Length: 50
Image 1 (cartoon, helix red, strand yellow):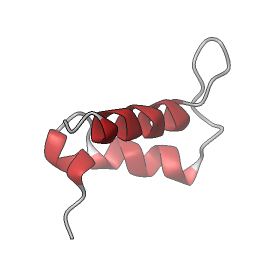
Image 2: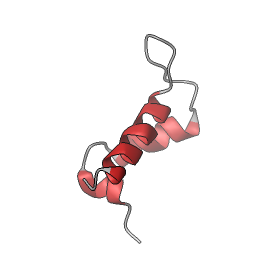
Image 3: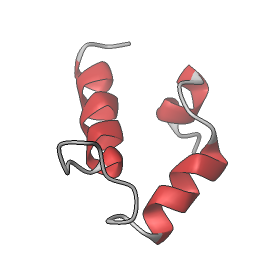
Image 4: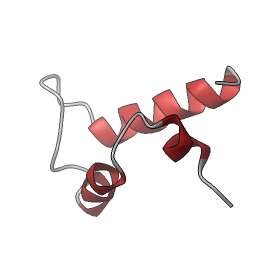
């Protein structure tokens, strides 16, 4: 199966793999997880049918 989030072309798979390998290593200035933000965006886009 193809991953719809990759079809959108919003991120490079290598960056996503890096975030997965160290989820707490790349935080936003407010100490939020960039990985969590990508997951939330992907879920929202899926729910919107985009």
